[in-house]
Image 1 (cartoon, rainbow, N blue to C red):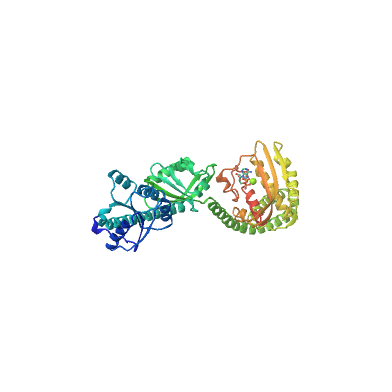
Image 2: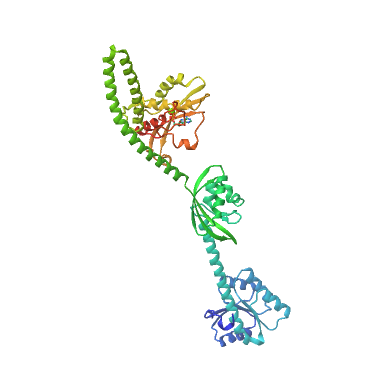
Length: 489
Ligand SMILES: Nc1ncnc2c1ncn2[C@@H]1O[C@H](COP(=O)(O)OP(=O)(O)O)[C@@H](O)[C@H]1O
Ligand SMILES: [Mg+2]
């Protein structure tokens, strides 16, 4: 940039000059040189170094004009002081003569210029120059501050963002940065993350999926769907991923937002399940209701037939067989009614522990001696308002399933405990109303279930047992009864 195109820097008006000069004539000559050139000057003087320090410290001078040799100190000491105090204050040496060596030293120490006393006409230009430089330095410091501030703001927005975020190198897949909630979500410290790659928080299948995904070469900011990630303690979480291209510290990177949606998806699945059962229950319960009435009539007529056919043994036998089958149909229909919550309840105040003792007392023979039965029943439980027969049905069905799961024996434990559902636990049981409950658990050491089975156990007619062994109605009935009682599973 040449001299003429340079924007005019604002010269403070008037300028404040601090003079370090013993000779009053020299002081006047210097000031006159400046005012002669159009400067308006407010001047002040200092003599000792203490006085100088004091004045520059709490005042805002625009420029210092200093003789080299001062009383017991020199212009060099003044320059050092300015440097030590970190001031943006130009100092021009105005001196009778200055050896070359000293001149170089002064320039090195940051003197804005030096003007010989017999060339005072140069002084205005030197001052103008010094002021320009001072202004330019101020400007640059302001810019640096603004840049630093904006970088700090961005770092803060990233670090304190409530959405878990990470920066990942697009080529090596190494993590370059992670924010606070990301550390919280995954359980790895920031330092651990910076040693890891994107594949380290994934199962092998998800890694394969990631590699396939990256092959597509995503360019735009992208909603990348739901991914399964693994936390440090081995838990799998479902995360919804948003990706954005950016450069970070000179590397091509992804900015990734990873929102944990595990709970949300779990609740959605629960809700979906509940809606499905509602629909099936209505259908099955509706049919079962009509069917049950018809069966009632059929059984009534059979009764009459049996009475009338007493003298005809073969006819009598047929009636008995029809009756047996009709009764089986009635049992099935009742189960569907239970699932469809169409049972007629006769609720009483019951002691759940007592029902459990009654049922398990009877169960002894059914479950066989190679299954060890134990009860862990909490004392002093509140009474439960429930239909006693249906409650026993629930306990029975759960225990029979446990037996079926332990063909070679094992342990069966029935537990009760008081449970409070408050707002926080309410999140996990969408259907549960807050309040006081008694919790019944039936635990066995049997085969257990895989995830796909667990999803379907309450479905009517869902069974993994061979034909003739399972009806797939046991848990459907339990589900219907519990729901009809205002409980939940
Ligand atoms: N305690 C258990 N251990 C393992 N699997 C179980 C258990 N209880 C239920 N199941 C599974 O749930 C399915 C449905 O149970 P249920 O509705 O009682 O029907 P069923 O017992 O006639 O099969 C069973 O077939 C089994 O796969
Ligand atoms: Mg069963």
